[in-house]
Structure formats: C-alpha cells, structure tokens
Image (cartoon, rainbow, N blue to C red):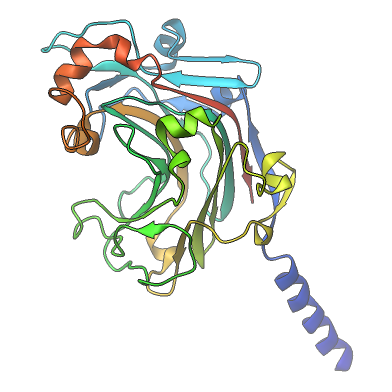
Amino acid sequence: MFASRTFVALACFVASAFGATYQQTDSHQGSGFLQSFSHQAIADPTHGRVNYVDQNTALAQNLTYYSGDHFIIRADHTTVLSPSGPGRNSVRLQSNKQYTTHVTVWNVRHMPQGCATWPALWEVGADWPNQGEIDVVEGVNDQSPNQSTLHTSSGCTMPASRSQTGTSTGNNCDTASTNNAGCGVKAPSTNSYGPAFNSAGGGWYAMERTSSFIKVWFWSRNDGSVPADVKNGATSINTDNWGTPYAYFPSQSCDLNSHFGAHNIIINLTLCGDWAGAVYGSDGCPGDCVSYVNNNPSAFTNAYFDIQWLKIYG
C-alpha cells in the first residue's frame, strides 16, 4: 500500500515537474513549407482586394519562393489592376496537418508592411467559429503593436484581470456578439508588428495551446531575454521558463475543449477587406483602399513574409 502511494505521488510529481515540457513534432524551413502547407486558391473569406493563387501560379510569379532558410510569400507588386477585374494576386497557405494541444514557435525576419496590408499567422478549425480561431500575428495598415485574438462561438469570455503583459481589447471571444472582433490582446512593444518589427530584424512568436489556457509570447530579434530553446529551435522546450506571456487566455470562463477543435495553421496576406479596409482612412492611409491597391503596385514591394523557420511541439 505504501509503495503504491509512493508511486502515485511520484507520478504526480513527474507530471507536474514536466507538464510544460514539449518535444518537437514538426520543423518547417525553406522548401519544406511547400511539402507541409498547401496553397488555397479560394475567395478571400474576409472580402479583401486579393486573388489567392494556386501553388503553380505562386511559384511562377515569385509570390512564393525559397532560398536556403528564407521562405517568402508575398503579394504581386508589379501589376496595375482593372477596377472590374480580380484583386491583387497574393498567397494563403494552410498546413496539411491539424493540431490540438501544441506549441508553435515562429522565427520571422520580415512581415508584410504598407497601407492596405493585413497579414496574419493564425490557426483555425474546419467548423468556424464553433471550433475556434487563434490569431497569433495580425494587424493592418502598419498599425503597431501586434494583436493576438481568439474568435469563438458563444459562451467564451476572459477575466478582466489576468497574468499577461499585454493590453486586452475586449474580453468576450464570441464572434456573433462582438461583430467578429473576438477577445484580443495587444502586445506591449511597438516592434512586435509592421515596419518597427522589420527594422529590428523581426523576432520570435510562440503560442502554447492546452485545455487549460492559450498563451502567446513575443521576443524581438535583439532581445536579450529570448529563451535559448526558442532562439535555437530546440528539439525539446519548456514553456515554464519563458516568463509571463503578453497574451493569456485561461479556461476559467471558457471551456477551451468545447470551443476549440483540431486546427490548421494559416499563413496569409490579404489587402483591404473587413478590417484593413474598414479602418484604412482612420489609419492615415491615402485615398480609398481598393483604388490604392488597384493603382499602386509598387506600394507592395515590402508586402512579404520572410520566415526563417516554424517549429511545432507536442
């Protein structure tokens, strides 16, 4: 009996001690992204002024390409568009695998910048919004800082006070009652998004999803506090050593298991649309969004992602 109790206690200790330790399950770099992600040539669900192209078109037009550990996706930056024709060619990638409990670590050198741009690194279930959405990196029109957001069905809210360094934009994650705003958290640092992010050489984003919480961290390229396992893309990581996240979404008033299903990872760049288009003028951008996209291809010279790698842990 004593031996049995000792074993159970030891098992609980081990589970507690190593509860935040994960092993690498997937590593994507360079050409590997083309094996692990698929181009989605679909109508933009957010009604942007883009034309998402298939892989053959993306490769032929250099909208997707790789060199060594550089993986690039971008919008077309050479074509003047007809107002009555399709939008600017761009790319939307979806992971072939799905994930539940996991950690993603993104090493990003450059993100799309410019008026009208709306880039995102995010995850979503097949049955939206019932299987949830986690936006890790998202913003519009060069407006810093980054915002990480959950979008769910009804019955998911966040406590007003919680252990995070970012600033909440709202605590009701229900898309229906928030006009799809969800429950967002803005990062505390201006170099977490847009031109400031790019000028700093990018950085690392990490997201941890469990049945108890979802957390998001950011470290700029020259941040001395970036954990070694994050910086090096280690095969084993311990999220307990990463400090306070800037975004913390606990399960106390949101059953994460019932609001979040198996997720695909998405990398995309849209232009204008439901968010970037709606705030285009108030963000200080010239003219109207759609005309700007149609008539100014050179404005999108810097509208590209340069991803060094993506590591996934389970």
